[in-house]
Length: 291
Image 1 (cartoon, rainbow, N blue to C red):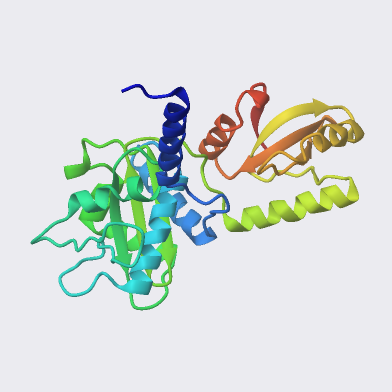
Image 2 (cartoon, helix red, strand yellow):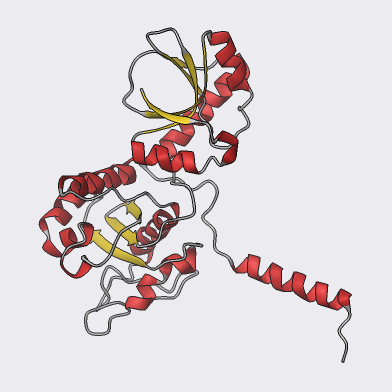
């Protein structure tokens, strides 16, 4: 039986549509809280003290982490014999009643693949208390517990793992940490407060026609796209990039009277490198400056 080219194309389009629909994506407006970012910094600082590299922040694993802490607080799957790594049957995921007698490790590890396009497995560390928690409280607890510290520092049963992606989630009285061995293809998530501030600055620049000029050190890492001898030229260049997604345009003035145009800035060098890599070839000549 012959298949017409029209029927074949229609079938392929249908298959493509079904495939695209089945893909799980992190929402475009997803962001993390300041507390979540603080916990991420505490964990990497602990790794640095112990001679280990920082683990990049992963949007996919942060989304999984946030989804889980909300599920834990809202639906309480951690009841009866089910522990904190368990997931309820109230969401678009496979429920897991995880415990030492009937472990459901695969159910846990596959959550990043179920909820996002992250291609690797995930490993989770969880925390809960009666009242709303704080990142310092969570970290101090994990630091003192051998099993948790070994997980963070790739020791003992985790010594053969190499963490290349990290996700954190804090909601009410719950906190979780996710680690993965594969890098996340998505750019690192921004904090919700940074996004709000960027929107306000962008609106101010669009309405006033001027940009924030920084002349004092901020201890942040800036991605520089151009340098000029006058603020007028710098502002003219900055205006060309007002429509660039997630841009936070600023002008930095140094002691030599140079005006450098920054398209985004980050609290750490690792985050800045990750951000620069996501800019693509359009900004291949950009460089990172600590200011």
